[in-house]
Length: 111
Length: 526
Image (cartoon, rainbow over all chains, first blue to last red; front, top):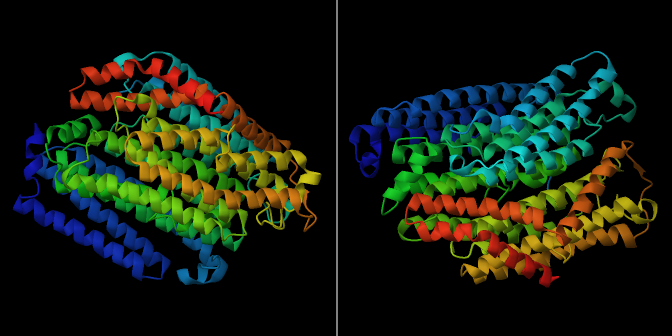
């Protein structure tokens, strides 16, 4: 049924704009992940990547007129929230140890 | 989800037990807190029995992946039992005298949740559910890595593992979003239908698949997302390392099988060729990089981390050649890979169990010097370690030999002779560092005085693993038939998806005859 769209889904001009936004957000997050040294900024970068994915899913969901993508986004946000709580807990634990959030302070193991 | 609730019985048992264990972990009295291990152990045994019983009831066409799911559940709960036994006195306190006061049940709760995720993985039939199952496996492991022991190395391992883990999740999610965009549904059967219906796989689906593979490569510790593994394996407590070498890897490989099932494995022409090519490049690089860098290590946990990378490479060979030759079900790459997954889980968990048992300078033995000359004082532990190492090398009469044999067979018979040769060269390279562990145990004089950890369950777990390695090496029929049926189910699904299937389905039904031939071959190979 919806499968008939499959070959043409990337030629729809409106959809492509949203997909471009999703891809740009994902790329910004990826660059931030590589370039930033502060743990909270690194974590926020991964959150930006998740939001890029969410925009993709919502755009496709609207394009195909079904709710699969939107329900995916709800699950994605829930899991991202769980990861956020874990990340903040981890950051607090690490900060108590070394009084810094720079990831370079945590690179003892080599080889 | 289309499968009835009672098929989820093993996972429900594990999750309920995890909740109970987490609650008991907060109790005031130490003896109540210490019931956590027993509850985890009993729940995993129950889950194993439940998985076995569900698997023996023939579900018929309503549940096409019944054996595959059963194999996954039995693997998760069976190896889970060994893992609970070897982490009996987790979490380690840096001061052993205080370990009674610091004992908490969370570790076991996290472990059960993660194992439930592994067990659920094969039953997934929707991208959303696949995502949830992957995260159900991963999120508890982040906590286990960071809190497994109190030293800075564990916390360093914790951040590396967590941040790279969420990066990999973002990457494969991006791939999922494109797969959804390709066909407009997250349901596996609809995605498979869209792949089957398109004569040429469009770029959007190929990009999606490539990103899914790269993201999941993190879970299985394969190149290019392997570089966290040595640090994380070394930094965290040894029982957690044992867990990491099993749970995320099993989950990742099963997820990869499910994702490739969607494509119907027909990716051999046009731009779609990039997908199997990527898998083969990853396989070759993982094997070679893992084995070569392992040669340079003195720390055994680090060495086993590189070994885990290289074993992922071997399994990727099985995945890359896939069920290519549907007419030769006995050398189905998926069957070979699933067999290898079971074999590898048992032998690596056995090796880590010995390391946990031998108390090193800090908590568990880590360095080659830590285990020097242990054979004279702890012959049983040394023997278990030696058996596991020989099996990891792939010596005959061990389960590791059969695993490598099937992978090589599958590669040869699908026309990938070069891959098979690379596997064999790598097996030879790997022998060097595994043998250095054995020589260190048997031929050197003790370097430092060492003690062993008190709970007998740790040694018990090592002994079971070593016994299984030998028994399954001599009598592989149980593991073999399970992996064979699972692999053939995947093949059958492909046949149905492509609906040019009568001949192929007939092949699958003659599988049991083929299996006998294969078993005779294996026996003769001894």
